[in-house]
Every structure is written in C-alpha cells, then in structure tokens.
Amino acid sequence: MIPLTLTATLRSPMHLGATNTAGNFLASLSYLPGRSLLGAVAWAWIDAGGDPGAPEFAHRFVSGAVSWGDLHPVPVKEETGAAVDGEPLVVPRTIKVCKLSGLRHGLVDVLLTTPPPEACPLCGVGLDRLEGVLVGDHDGRWLSPELHRQHRAHVSIAFDTGTARSGDLYSRDVLEEGQVFRGQIHCSDEPTAKAILDELPRLRLAVGGARSRGFGQIEVQVKRATASTLEVLREQSERVAQSPADVWYFTLTAVSPWCVRETDGSHARSLTPRRLARVLGVEEANARIVRGDARSESRSGWDGAAGLPTELRHVIVAGSTFLCAVRGLDGPTLQARLLRLSGRGIGEHRAEGLGRVAVNHPLHFISAEANRDE
Ligand SMILES: [Zn+2]
Image (cartoon, protein in one colour):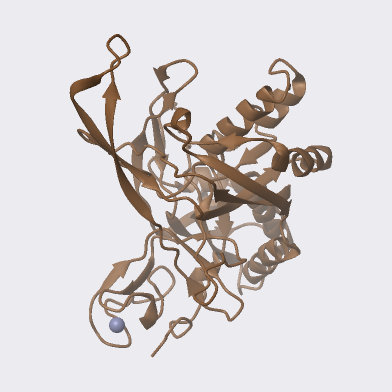
C-alpha cells in the first residue's frame, strides 16, 4: 500500500449534508467523507476528458485498488493562523478528557488502564469522551481543530414564476472558506500513485451541496505520506511482537467507519472474535476481544447522478476500538498480518475510505501528563 497525504483548502464555503438534518435547517458534517472526495475527483476526471468506461476509471474509483479516505479538519497555529503539518488522527472512543478543563488536563485512556480511571487525575472532576480528531504538533502536544461555521439563510425559487416559493425559507449550516482538511489516499500500486500525484492538483474539485451556487470549491495538494507513517506502523506492530508469553495483545481502532458483513449477510454491529480470527488467519478459539468500546449506526446517502437515495448501510462508527488477544502465531507472523490488515483495511466500500484500521493507536499509549498545560 502506498499512502498519499491530501491537503484540501476550502476556496468557498462548503456544505456537507448530515443525515440528522431536520425541518428547515440543513446541518453540515464536520469532516469531508471519502465518498464525497471520490465523487468529486471522479466527476472532475470525467470533465477533464477522462473516459468513465476505461479500465483506469474502474481501477481508481470502483475496484478498491485506491481508497479515498475521509478528510478531517486541521488545527491552526496560534501565532500565524496557518494549518499545522501533522495528520489528523481519529480519536478512539476510550480516550477521555476532563469535563471542565478539556485537553489542558491531559488525555486519559480507559481501554488499557485497569481499573479504568473515572475522574480527571489532576482535578478530580468527571471525564467526557473526546470526539473527533487530534493532530500532533512538533512539540509532542495534541491539538484539537476548531471548525468555523456559519448559518446561511436561503429561499427556494420557483422555476415557473421566478419568485420565492411561499414558506420555503431554509437555513444551511456551512463551513467557512479558508479552512484546511487533511487525510490519506491509499494506492495499491506505484503507477496509480504517480498518476494521482500528477493529476489531482490540476483538477477543479467541488464537493458537497449547493455547488451550483459556487459552494464547495476545494484546492488540493497531494504528496507522498511521510516515511514516519510507515515507520510508526512498524514500530507499533513491533510493540505487539514484544509482549511476553504466547498470547499477543494489541489494539485495533476504526479510524474510518467499518461496513462489515456477517456470514448471513447482515451488517456487523461490532468486531467479533470470529471476524478477528478470519482477518488474522487463526482458529476462532485463538482470537479474543478482551474489551472494547464500539457503536454502530445506520447511514443513508444521496446519489446525485441517479437522483435516488443510496442503499442503507449499517456501520461501526469511526473511533470504535478494541483490545484484542491472539495466540497460536509467532510474533513476526502476527506482525506481518497486522501490517497487511492496516494496509488493506476491513470490510466493504474501501474505495470510499471505509474500513481503515489503526493497529496500536498511539493515543492509547500516551501518558496522562502528555498534554497538560498546568
Ligand atoms: Zn481536570
């Protein structure tokens, strides 16, 4: 797998529809889903003269050989207002922060610490789950991005009369221009990676709703992911191989939604020992989920081209995380299989960036003091 880092800057306000939208208010997502990115790139590629019937089209956008990941907001440096360099990391659901002081009182992980802490170690008040993403900066601190939103009021115009439709005032939640989002594209082969590096910055990309009003224009930069991405992976799987005895412990975290089918065709609600055994090639009796924190939900989308709702999917949400135990493998073999798992991902719809896996997510291993300000 060849990882590329894509940085997108909003050149106009962006509206990405959320499914929880009610009444006359159109809520916006706080990230750019891989599905929207894939759609925008595919359309732009066709607009630029690409043939949707060509095998290259299927290879890039349909086959899963390229995984177009979610793009998450990037925090800005306080002094300059410029986006920081790091990659946004989806926070595991077991990471908590102080209810009152947030990140300034450090991060607490309740997956690996036994017994799990119930209060802020610094001030004793309760803990809240930390949602979304964090980005590491050069000083080893974790920063949380802040999104700038606006509500825009609109009226619908009736085509026949050219006047406002009665009673059709609605408001749209938009992300303001100038904000920066970042994520990864995973390519299965070098020629495709090269082609994407070359072509993507030249395509005119627009994502989300109200594109006819000029919304959703993005400018992208794409480069090879820093070597550290692969090194970190290697380092983390080495940590697994160093655990003593014949049982290996490691964590698996969904860093994008997982759409996993059970053998009877139904959507899985969580990671099961059976699935774990299957992806690692061990007997079911040798795979165990020690504990975890998972949530699943139904998602539907809208296919703009067909003018139809897309199939309903049930996904295990990003941030779901599991402590796993496996026996019956030697360390190097397990390490190789975990590397393969984090390169390929799990479940369906990987072309749209679903199924991304982090092995031994770094946030499970940072000390409670790491982010303290006081
Ligand atoms: Zn506190």
